[in-house]
Image (tube, rainbow, N blue to C red; front, side, top):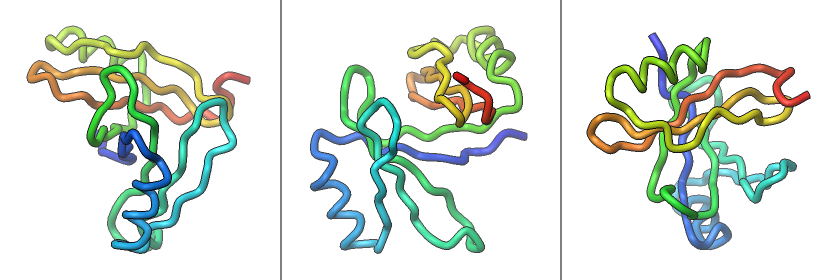
Length: 123
């Protein structure tokens, strides 16, 4: 089975949103050193149930919260999404040193991310 392993909060004001979740829930935020303005979110100790996430700037079809599913083979997952009536919103793209990411809308219009870990991606 493939599980949700990451979430993204999409906002117009990164600092305001980070401050809210940090103050209310004690979450920690760290700016990512990548090519886009993206902040990593730590929601708790890895020894307890839950997932960590990211904070990203609202743009295009991204809004609200987007959950990401970890897959072993992103190309096969994309093919299955399409075969079952889903629509690829953002094609597979390399996140250097991390893996591959794509986004789709399911047959009910829910936006979801796909991620395949690969430390050699984009290298």
